[in-house]
Image 1 (cartoon, rainbow, N blue to C red):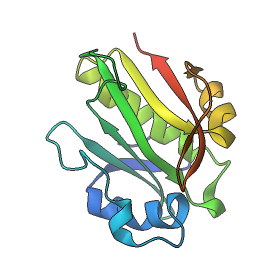
Image 2 (cartoon, rainbow, N blue to C red; image 1 turned 135 degrees about the vertical axis):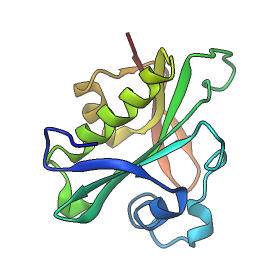
Image 3 (cartoon, rainbow, N blue to C red; image 1 turned 90 degrees about the vertical axis):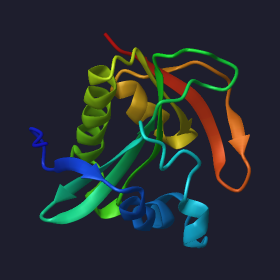
Length: 151
């Protein structure tokens, strides 16, 4: 899918997402810790953003409601990351738009994530709202649940 951004976004495999997950989300940890539950579910999609022919960012969407909820229209955004050298160039926005389009095409009504506290301003700029108090994911850091209501 070609976006009006500096990146081309296309579907990738979960395995293709591992190297960027490892570098950006789980630095210094073994690759096995970068495999997420539901990575291979039939509804799950993984997206890669390519700039200059190199994969510079990733994001995955899972047809899952937030813990404790039973919303069939909810999808989780997880494992979103853009390489440091490619940040602030519209690549994250292109990934979000691709994920959003995928969810809307499948009848989704809400996209939610556990956003790292430092990424809250990025997600807020793109339409997500904080829906919960800050919490800690052990060995990863502080997060907020955020969501984006879809049309």
